[in-house]
Amino acid sequence: MLTPFGWTVRSQGDWKISEAVEDGLSFIENALIKARHAARHTGLRALGDDSGLVVDALGGMPGIYSSRYAGADADAKANNQKLLHALRGVPVPKRAAHFYCAMVMVRHADDPAPLISTGKWMGRIMEQPRGEGGFGYDPLFWVPGNECSSAELPPEVKNSLSHRGQALTGLIAQMKDEFGN
View 1 (tube, helix red, strand yellow):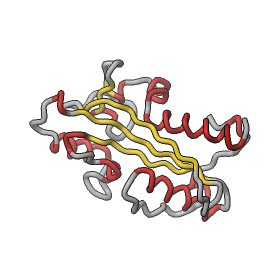
View 2 (cartoon, helix red, strand yellow):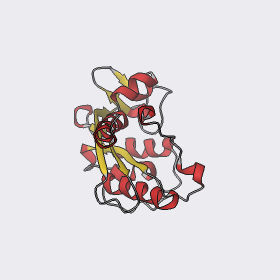
View 3 (spheres, one colour):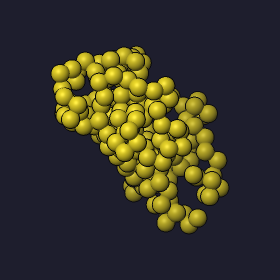
View 4 (tube, helix red, strand yellow):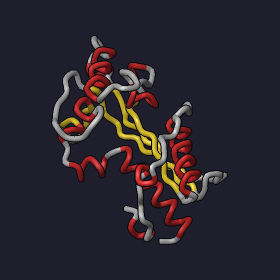
């Protein structure tokens, strides 16, 4: 999606940069921390994103702690088990949830006006996992209208619906205004 800008996109790992300390209180703060961290270490423009699952019945948890909901070294299976345990006894109609993504682009590490875009993908948490695709909470996330879990969607469909796809589409629109293309 970034091809029209003529940029080479490289991951932070390509630069052997340590992970940023995500100590923000929101998805936007953490995305900005990540982008500034990468820009500071490379001297280049940088993108950062922070994403997670927000469950209404749990007051927004796991939220910014989604990847480490069951502990710092937990895997997706442990996070999913903890989520199902936390929702035990909550009826299906009360299991509303959404995936949320904040995506940020900074021109340099101290950019005072970063480009920011967000995406929100509405659904609900199922009582049992379904599907083999995707990652993280995808087997538990029911996608209304598609009548399946996120893990059962083909990748191209998931990318067109997802919170990350929405955030990137919004960010690209801002980048086109900023950089022309």
